[in-house]
Amino acid sequence: MIKIDYPAYDFRIKEEAGRELIFDPQRRQWVRLTPEEWVRQNMLQFLLQVKKYPASLIAVEKEIMLGELRKRFDLLVFKNDRPWMVIECKEMNVPLNEAVLRQTLNYNISLRASFLVITNGRETHAFSLLDGQAHPLGSMPDFET
Image (cartoon, rainbow, N blue to C red; front, side, top):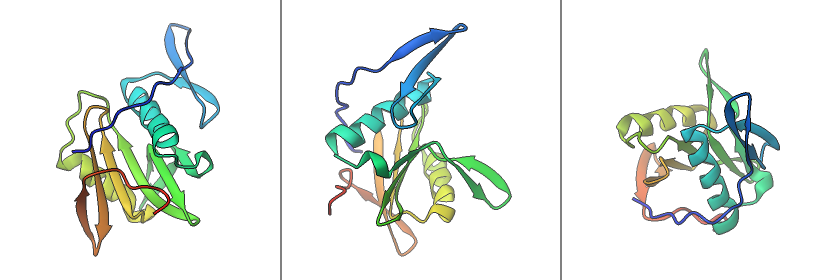
């Protein structure tokens, strides 16, 4: 498991029509503040502020096709014009088990990223993919190396 200290960030939150919304600076829009969205926004700030990943190379909640199925990844970091790291975010009470890893591996069939990350905000696990095998990492990969 990787220890993540999420940075302080002044999230913009509002209520509209009885729903809480949070402004996503990456997507430049207000989105519904769900427990999973809270984890996604904190992870995004960690990537930007702590790991210094370039904002222009991070995609948030985009649709991909898995065969005939339409799915949405949470976060995808690009490097050298190709997917580099796919991050799956779950709400805090969802355990990070093999099913979550398998879901992320399934997304990666079409993305073909070198790294996978799964997080629920409390626990985070990162893996490098080599020869079709997921190898656990002790820390989040640095973008520059």
